[in-house]
Length: 599
Image (tube, rainbow, N blue to C red; front, side, top):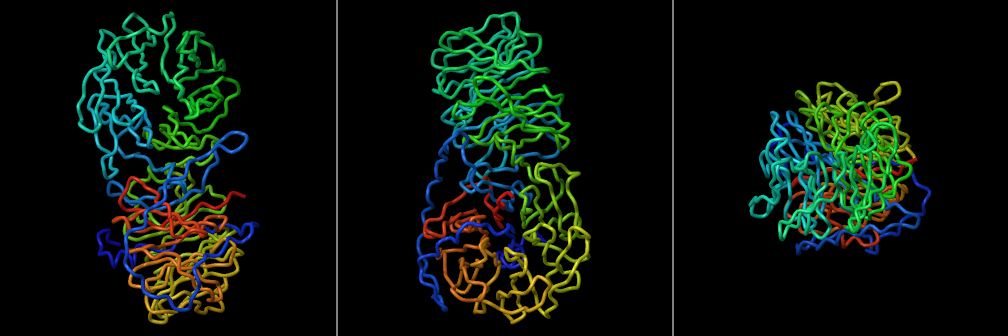
């Protein structure tokens, strides 16, 4: 399928149904919208773009860790690649992060607004990279590594020069101006800002062995903080500025220590087999992420900032490195070689949700994701060599975890899991016409459900798995139909002028959300499965489409170009007039699918 198409062709052929097929929850039904349902809906009146609401703050619930909002998988186009990404429904935790072929990405640093800078090594030469205004990676400094972003996000400090002879430099991100801040005969490296942005802690071997130093950025005055025969490395300042965590080999192997910057009295935090290093403070200062080989592999761990038992977050035969907390407080960004080269990954602080969804899969034109009911895998359609087929991918896995499920002469696309996870419904063009098929994932058998003269497409399962709603052009226009899961009793539920398509069954079974062009542009509607209660949810000046329900049925995510480019939004059914805009790094984000509730 060509990748450069007209807008009409894109809307007709590329954007299609995709939704999580979660089991029906036991919660009560969500409140119905306050708008009065009507059988006929007037054309929309163009108006200003609705102002999105601010991203809600994440408050700590009683007892500790921050609550995690729902997660969306979606299709995004970045750097010319169409891949599957994920983002949390409050706009935080974006992943896939830059695992391009031929380079290693390590040493990520996070700014106050979630911006990421990192070290890229190509052909043996390191450089510091970040994102340009369109979200594409761009080089910031050559012969540079170990970037640290200032607390205001306006500048960064990095180690520049040849290894063993490095000095510290400061880059003004807006102007590109670079100036030295620390120069010596030794190797100055590993900078870390204090929270007020006035000082930088760093490592230097200027006096014979690696020790920790502090430089005042206003005066240039340098102060030595440690003076031991051991090697001190990896300084990290607590969010309140009171503590300095670091690694030292004082005991013979690298372990973690911390000291109060007011009195420089160190205390050991770890004393486990193997080595521990690279401490990173959580935004609330309560926890430390770090790297350790205590269990044999170089893995990511989290523990309380005062020491004690550590929790292992990753487990694979490839090394992990360079942890950095995301500003949301419940996600950690880190580097890993699990896909053959160093790339950047994110994982929740409880060890769940490892994500670099398709970053390591070369030449994959991927779109239309759907979550498995257990939330551990993604199914999507991908183009690798001529036509689209259905693929299954274990989240956080590598190329060996990509499973091709179909291989037919025509396109197979827009797959959706059955609520029990044992089947997939999808569109196939193998016989020259678009029809709906079901694949049994346990025995590999397929069943054709529709065989109308015109196109049937975009299936979605009812929460109990007994029915399938789908779009069809069999009446000369795109309308909504329902059939039993075995293909029997096919009948329309929505028929009107203009396109009605992309139906998505609510988790409660009470509603079906869909996209309609009956008013001259795309808007979101809901309707009961028997065709009653038609209700319009959006009335924007441009297009809103491809709805997907949250597991509790209280929210709908969708894509829209009301800001001039395709972005993701989330609206509450109780307040559809004030959707939340979820900003990403791409100008083309489509086909959201909400992660199901975990069993």
